[in-house]
Length: 177
Image 1 (cartoon, helix red, strand yellow):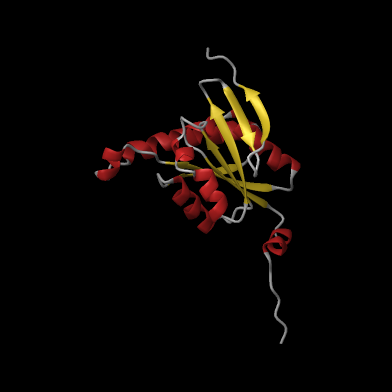
Image 2 (image 1 turned 180 degrees about the horizontal axis):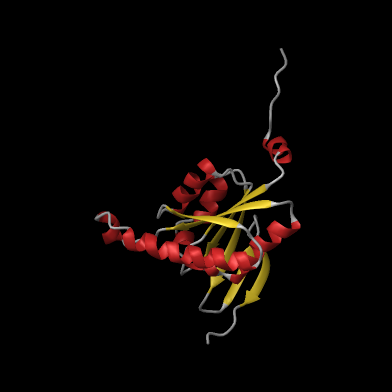
């Protein structure tokens, strides 16, 4: 009897469509995020994209299980993001996820086996996700490449941080009208 072991690389080779999971909240409308997704879809083989917008809530509303407003706000951001991706000819799906972004990623991976995860956050000092080491914990927990996009609305800058913390691209946001 012969046993064949299928590795992750074999599975990816057999599947021709790359799967990209994107997790973002207020940063979901970032131009660098959209451009990064667009480049990965057009320069690579065909790709499926799933955007997850965690339904972030206040502690009080979380305690009383009142997440309706948080889910509605996440849905609105998600729809704006999907509309802007469609302009770039990126066909993406989206879901509102758990308020805990690590749990939202885990939940999404159960039905969407991503080859790559993109996490968009605010910069250090203004990001609750970074204060809780989200990117570091996600890299330790999930065995796929994780890219980190930082959106600094105060300084009007966005940048892509690669898998080892190296800045890959920087963009200046247009002045507010």
